[in-house]
Image 1 (tube, helix red, strand yellow):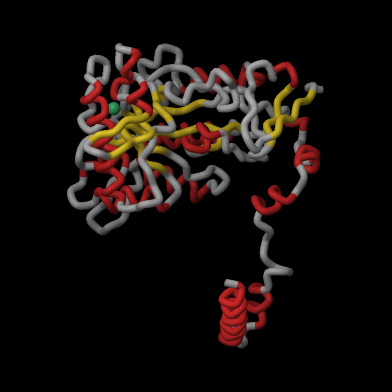
Image 2: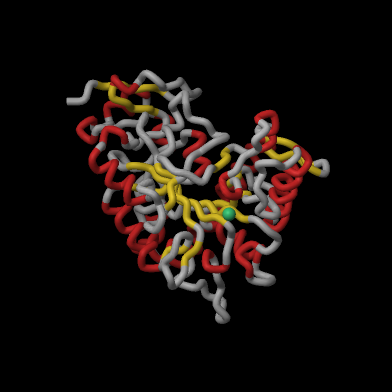
Length: 359
Ligand SMILES: [Zn+2]
């Protein structure tokens, strides 16, 4: 093995020299290619090599980090020209993003939320964006092959381009056999979403209520859709492992609830890391012992018929109660909390607590 390795290294050097030779005409390019002097350091490699004590010392406590605070998971459905209960106009949607951006909220993936892998910029608050039903107005290709700028994807891409520090993170929960309802383009759309770091979630095969469904039906509705979406996406390294319950309804027989998380259908096993409800309050910190990945609340991201529990109600609430808000310390390995908030926190493998007395 060693010999093979040394030979490989020698070949690598020859290859590198050859590579440098080909750009010899440009001294600027050569300088840029020197890893020792020019390449920016990889932040994750640095935080792996720095001791936890040094990491803690880099946290600015004046920003009042509170990783025991609440996280909003926002639920959208449609983008359209006429605002209604389940439709947001393009300008209202962009206004939502602007408001969230200005008030210090930044999207993270649903997976990072449920696994507690939160490295949102120091002093800011993570949020999760979700879209249900996979309608055409979420993701539409125009005849010239471009993405409709007033579809959800178009608006998200545009906002991210103007504000690169507002990460391109969102989960699209899809039911039915034609994601985003444009014939022949389903695979391409799913791949685009995942290739751009966003996510595909499961919204069951037929968008049926699971309230009175049998165990067979539950497993079929979830398992067949997970399998279908995975095949359509065509990537072995990506599992569709998050579920949004149609109408927010879960089995009334509690013994069947476990099938929302895992089960099998037609010989294929599924395992969900997150099950999403429809209402109506912010989610707990993933470090809170009361956090339940099988029942994650979402907030209606609209303004009509939201019964005082919509997005803007909670934005106001967190403005008035900043101590209730999750505020990141910027470092995923360290969980920083004011000492009075330690009560419900549970230890997580590979992460360290850092408590402080607010000044
Ligand atoms: Zn739905």
